Amino acid sequence: MDFKGSDTIPGPRAEDQLPHTAQSAVKIVIVGGFGVGKTTMVGSVSEIKPLTTEETMTQAGIGVDDNFGSASKTATTVAMDFGRIKITEQLVLYLFGTPGQERFWFLWNGLFEGALGAVVLVDTRRLEVSFDVMGRLEERGVPFVVAVNSFPDAPRYPIADLRTALDLSEQIPIMECDVRRRASSRDVLMTLMRFLHSLAMTGSLT
Image 1: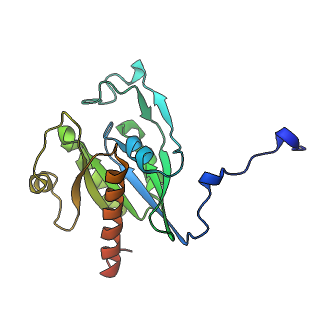
Image 2: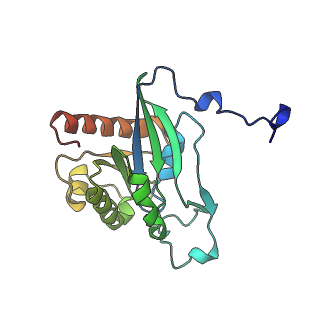
Image 3: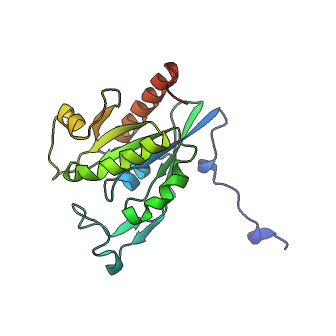
């Protein structure tokens, strides 16, 4: 087939190309239950136009997907979200947001492959969902930090109480965030990177 003129296959957009100074690229997964803000976080912090696989929610999901606290949500991720952010001139993070509904969790194993670390997004209205999420990361040996997304109508608890409720060790960072704000999402990622660095320094990161 002859690709000429307007038929030429376009290359990557200039804004999608890695900075020429980049020396290291790290895969990070953003996980959590349905509607906790994973797509929003990837979109708010990504320096490139994020790739999303959102589909319109239909009647078929009624009674299957738990949309408590997300009644106004009309679309859902069915495969993954993808974005990218440059932390330093040399370090770039690839961000992979996982689907939230349990019926799509079988896709997580593939997304976890090669991930250096993870962000677990938590909604205080549905803390129980987080146990399965964190359990899967622990089974795969993926280090993670916990970020409590501040929904307007969600109850607020002291971080110490949340740590106890989630049965988190003192080693695992936990913080509040607003994933709609780029600076807040970036702070979460920086906390994860500092955590991974500390694990590497102590030989706990394999």
